[in-house]
Length: 228
Image (cartoon, rainbow, N blue to C red):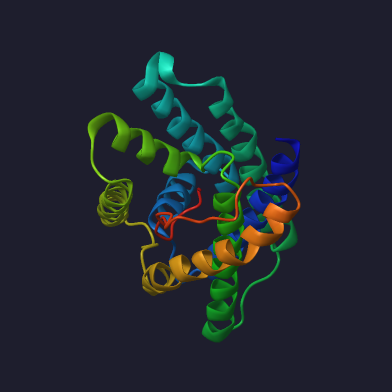
């Protein structure tokens, strides 16, 4: 358990850094990242703080759906979310606060770097299989309680959130955060994450972080995520 936590927490920090890069690039975000960024803009709150609030609501949803079946172990998602949100704030507002990409090419490179970092961090967290990111956890609980494949429910959640973000953006005259980056991210996130999962499984097994080097076709969540 301790070995898993020692690897997962830095990876969550890595994911948060990638999220900050994607936000700074401003060429589009994954569905849930876009929703969180939009909400933070509407209420005048830092993005990372909204990440914490939104993901805590996803944990609360899991608790409501599972009732007494919700295990105390699953509360490990809370420190994961706290690390994620605070590092997003630190990187976005402190490290990158005064940095403004000078051209679209720079924005594009920053975005690709962000997605690659996020996918790599999520890949390691998925390989370790300690606790899921709250959004994935909520979709998994929903699929178990009401039936249906996790991947289908996860994609349906993305579609619903995309429609919601577009609707709110037009109604309240906000900048549209669903753009070309959203599509690019959707195409490259899964393959990158899958490669990373395959690469890290043998060494993590050798060091006793995970129990088996056998990977049985894990379902790969779509890019988004992370607010994951």
